[in-house]
Length: 510
Image (cartoon, rainbow, N blue to C red):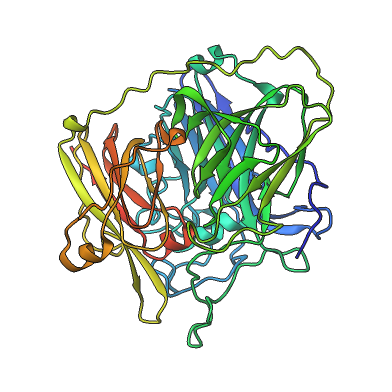
């Protein structure tokens, strides 16, 4: 379905107000509900799920070090909005169709509040999963200023719950950020980017079957889902009226599987100032920003002296990434900036020359290196099955890092896809990527490098919680495990992969 572009204004998600706040802690309540929302003026209102009646959910803003409690409440109907595949682990007939658990992605958080996939709960907490911990989650917010996000993480149906609308931004602020004199207030704009497909009646479409269909299965998990329409902040191909001045944008790829390679059609530079885990040491001027699912970028775009211009933000990342189909007239455009507002005051904000120190973790301080494969196989129905370390979710836990230990993980990609690998609890640094002989590895289980080690791209040289592990490459990341102990997970953030076994638990031990 082709919808007119740039006819609806970009909505800005509201900032969530706390129920209680004092010098010791802050308390929020967040309800998940089903409601109708206009995603495009040419479409009937679409039934979606959201937090606090908003899709995407309201932005949660907290201070670094602030102790925050959130009561997440499932007030969704008993019937799911989208087709469920009951053959997927954790989504069998013996559990309720609609169950949720919230993960603040990138949060430094105790394990009981991390949103473990099996710690799900139903409407009114009537039923809880095998790992249900508690109703009120605690967030210590031990990160510096950064762009995090929150989304559903229920075992076996994460792809459906997030696609239905359960996602929102979670921003941590600190004093250092305020001293940088960045564009702020109405000049700081979140951009939650997703892809959707709509039926003629305006409802969300999600496939029931892969291609070709599997006759013995009524509903079957698809290898990846790519929508044919781009949605930003809950509007299809919106426009944003801007003044001729600098703006700060918090970009989030909240899609199930689509990668975005973001550019401005004007060819002008975007100044990236932050990665997943916060500020970079120096800003970098870039003409394109690559965002895998779950990756974020903090950027400044300068519209000074561009009065009257209409600037389109484009995307040219193939699907699946990196060797799939090219984008088309729909998926190749994201949104439009109209430089049509008068300058309301002199723009005194800056793109700082230096932002924060970025101390690199010394490779020599790592106590252990761990080779971990990304595998591609088939299930008994002939469907694609992606695995981590060639193990399914419920295999015995093999990653047990000690609290405070520094590890290097070698992500050995034996599949044809790029996988955005996300680790809960910690932020890491990317060391390098290196081509290797996949055939030799499959036969002999030894790594034969076929090229030099490539350092991370300039836009990745900061703290990360999600890394693109490319095909035919070994991607090395280094991290310190802590400050909490307990059970967490690591997984691919292509949600169809994550739901169908490409996720593993790990335990931080004392």
